Amino acid sequence: MTETEAPFRSPIPAADRAKPAVAAEFSPGHITHHGAVNGVTGSCHQLFADDNNSILIDCGLFQGAETSPGGRGQNSLKIEFDISTVRALVVTHVHIDHVGRIPYLIAAGFRGPIYCSEPSAELLPLVLEDALKIGFTRDRALIEKFIGYVQKQLRPLPYNCWQPVIEDSDCSLSVRLQRAGHILGSAYVECELDCGAGAFSFKTAPRSRGGKRRIIFSGDLGAPNTPLLYAPKAPWGCDELVIESTYGDRLHQNRKERVRILQRAIEEALADGGSVLIPAFSIGRTQELLYELEGVIHSQGHGNRADNPWRDLPVIVDSPLASRFTDVHRRLRPFWDAEARQLLRRGRHPLSFEQLITVDDHEAHRKVVAELASSRRPAIVIAASGMCSGGRVVNYLKAMLEDKRHNILFVGYQARGTPGRDIQAYGPRNGYVDLDGQRYQIAAGVETISGYSAHADKNDLLGFIRKMKKRPQCVRVVHGDDRAKAALKAEIEREELAGSVIVPG
Image (cartoon, rainbow, N blue to C red; front, top):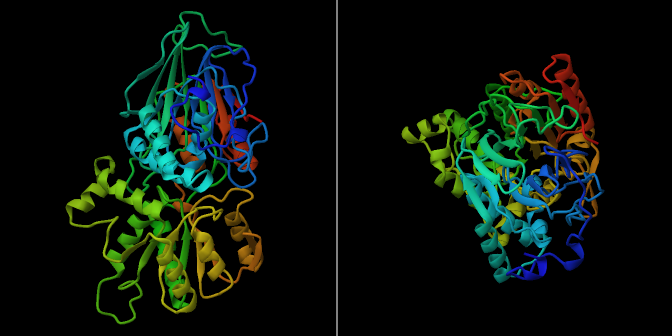
């Protein structure tokens, strides 16, 4: 179906839609990277079965100063590559840097199936609805029509089940999703190409069993012991691996250590009579923080000590989207890990405890910001966006950054060019940050807890490869800063975990 035949009026301006490109010739198993090459955002990878058939793995938004190989960034999001061969989109998880350009993909004419895990199928429409409201239109009827069409394209898949995607060509292609442990519903993608005996030459594609070749896209891999989630398990093996490298050059604190640091940071902030502001993504990080905070409150909030800072401490989630995601997380309890389900059996409610307050409408948000900025009432505030590049967290920052009573606590990666990265870098030096064109001196305390990252660290990434019984002949390192990619590449080569290691540029 062409763009003009679409059953809805596209919310994407015509000038921002993709222009047809000249199709190139690609051998079976060829991979082209359209994002997450010059940084950690905009994930989008294309796997070819042959010249006329391919699939996309993710189609994400660029954030901060990061761009696509062709120069597309957060202010120029139209699809810059030919999609005439794309038969399906496979979504690893629903973070905006992996799905945020799906509206542009559809506006460019894509009408194929969108494969994802069952939890992701429930979460994805919420993410895209929010992206459309923020970036494109407030027309409710148009958004509902668009989301309804997306839902028709969704094809939820259970974990660990093969799904044929391309069958009517010389090379067939099937995909299988496995738990990635990054956020609820996240997956890494196993792709199996079958082109018949002798189809792959060593030059173009390492040969596997007969004419079959296994290619894995890691998506974003999670750290072990992430709240609510099963840890990722390494696959049996593959011929080629495309792996993320967000924290390919560093190690995280373990879970006990990060909870201790979280508790200490909050108690120090409360002693100053201020609040703790935690910028966090609406999905994944917010729910993990709530889980951990409920545990700290449960262990520290008992007793009748008048000076117990935890007993009546409000935990405020100020994000309508995060509230909706948290509701969905509660509904998806069958996908929680064993530890979380055990807490429920004990009568604990890690995502709906007594001190949890949600702020939905804008007027209530405005009042909360004003009260916390002017009073000495302590609180923990979790607000999006996680990189401080927009959303309600920006209003809190404007009100709190110049007051030393408050503390900003980062628990996730901050991309180049985002306000979060600037606050993280310059806050400890009493520097400044520009928000909406105005300069703010940073007097508030700034702290980072790397252990709360939803991304695997260096050892976890290497372990993902070490545990494979069949090691990849080729590893492609993506989704990281230059230093992280180089460090992970060097370590893979040092341990001889792959025949070759490529850093796409």
